[in-house]
Length: 385
Ligand SMILES: *Cc1c(COP(=O)(O)O)cnc(C)c1O
Image (tube, rainbow, N blue to C red; front, side):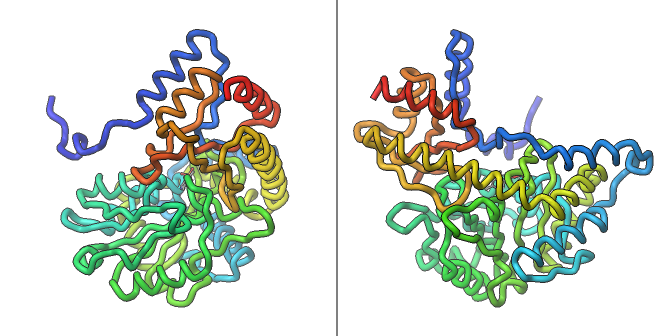
C-alpha cells in the first residue's frame, strides 16, 4: 500500500511517548491525576440533554440535516452573538453550523490555501491551525508567543514577501495554551494588517465566555473593518460543557462563510438536528451554566495558584481560558518536568513544547479536575518537591 505525501508530512504525535507513559503508570496501578486534556469534567446541563432526547424521537429529525445548519440554530447563534457582543449577522448568509469548531478551523484551510501559500500561525497554539494548513498543502509562518511579548503576535515581524504570500492570519484570545487575553489594540491592529495585506483574519473565540476578574472578552467584530476581512469561530464545547456533542458555528464575512460552506457541502452533511436544537436551548437559556462554570474554574484557579506558588513555582493566574501556563522550575525542560511529576507524583501536566517550540520551558495545566482531586495532586506534589 502507498499513502499520500501529505500523510508523511504530519509530524509524529508529540503526546505519543507521554500517552504511553500515562498508560504504563495506570497499568502498574498508579491512580494518575491528569491535568492534560482540556475537556470539562462537569456534565452538560440536564435541560440541554432533555431537548436532545425529545427531538431524537421525531422521525423528521432522522433524515439528513441541512448543510448550513437549521434556521433555528443559525438564528439562535446570531441572536446570541448580538446579545453578547452587540454585533448583528444575517443568519442566512453570515452564520454556518459546524461539527464542533475544530472541524471548521481545519476545513477553512481548504477554502483559503493552495500549495505555495502561507498561513500566519501563532505558536504555541491549538495544533489545528498549522495542521489544517499542512493538509491543504500550504505552509505556516509561525509567530512566537512569549512572556516578553505578552503572548501576542508581533505582526511587525512578518517579512513583506511572507505577508504577500499569506492568505490567512490566525488569532485566538482568550488563548489556549497560554491563558493570555489580548488588549483591544491587538484586534484593531490585526484587522488593519489583514486589510492592508488582503488576507483573511480568522479568530478562534472558543473561550470567549470563560474569563476571570471581571474581564470580558470581545468579538473580533466589535472592531471597525472586521466584517470586510474576518471570520470568527465559536464553540459550545467549553462554554456549555458540550465537548462530546460536536457543535459550534462560525460567523463573519459572507464570502468567507460561503467559501467554507462550499468545502463542507462536499465533505459532511451537517449536524444531527436534535444536537442543533439542544444547542439552541444552550444559547438561549444556558447563561447560568456559564456563570456557574466560571465560578468553579475561578475557585480551582485560585487554589492551584496558591498551592503551586507555595511550592516556589512561578504561577500567573490566567485572565481567560481553562488553562494555567506555568514556567517549569529551574533545571528542567518541559518534557523532563512533566515526566518527573508523572513518575514521582502520578500527576500529569502537558509539556508546553507540544504546542510549538516557544512552549519549551512551560507546562500546561487544564483546570478540568474536580477540587478534591486537585487537593490530592497538591498533597502528592508537596511530598516530592
Ligand atoms: C477546545 C478548542 C476548540 C475546539 O472546540 P470544538 O468546538 O470542541 O471543536 C477550538 N479552539 C481552541 C483553542 C480550543 O481550545
